[in-house]
Length: 186
Image (tube, rainbow, N blue to C red; front, side, top):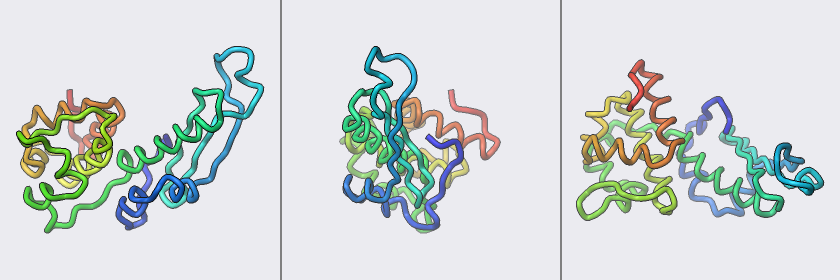
């Protein structure tokens, strides 16, 4: 992942997250190269590692764990899609900063269970879009957890558990907190 945090250039994240895989890949610059490191005799014989750059957002992802360039390209594309939700923030308009508006957000509403809680693994297709909304809310609330859970309609414990589902999500939530001089979540 790139170390700087990209911007959407004022466009909503959905500009890219709603694209098909082929459409997203068509917007990316694709580099292939020989990966270094362990992997046996055939590791460095072919240029199987893949780097995707998405110029509109500045996101960069790599995949080099497979000896198959095709598999690495598929993994990199999946990582790019995840990065859209992890690193691109949508600014919530003032009128969208209500529990009712967040509750019906198309990337958030389907993720809540019957009990109103967020409980899903990172493999669930709803997980990454939900991450995007949760991080947007955290940013809009200047990372004040109490305000964020009030908007999301979930408990503090549920928010913390959800953020801890994936280490990259936890890291990004804490990066947002540091921008507002807040202590990292534990």
